[in-house]
Length: 139
Image 1 (cartoon, helix red, strand yellow):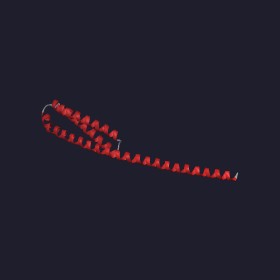
Image 2 (cartoon, rainbow, N blue to C red):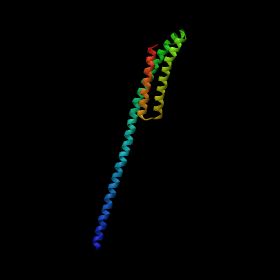
Image 3 (cartoon, rainbow, N blue to C red):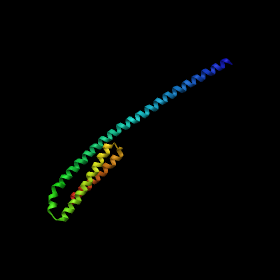
Image 4 (cartoon, rainbow, N blue to C red):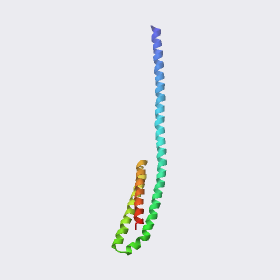
């Protein structure tokens, strides 16, 4: 009877040790996976952010070029009648809306918004810039 208790104690002790080692290994694996996920997400966000800054620079350059075009014809429309001034101001308003959308992209990038939200703001800014370009072409 004494030997069976000793044998039972040894097997129970061995089982507890093996389960403990398995739990330690599984904990290490889970912590490593979570760490990997955090690091890979951070790297992906940085890469996405870099391309978004490039797109923002393109938007700003397009806005600047269009603004110069508007300024070059301003005197022509202001020399005309009130209707000409109204037409020019309506077109210039579209350019101002495009600038506001571009600034909205900049604020989203500065605030560290998620990349899908920044991408949607970039698309909106592109649409507004296209609208302003069409308004200029209609002048």
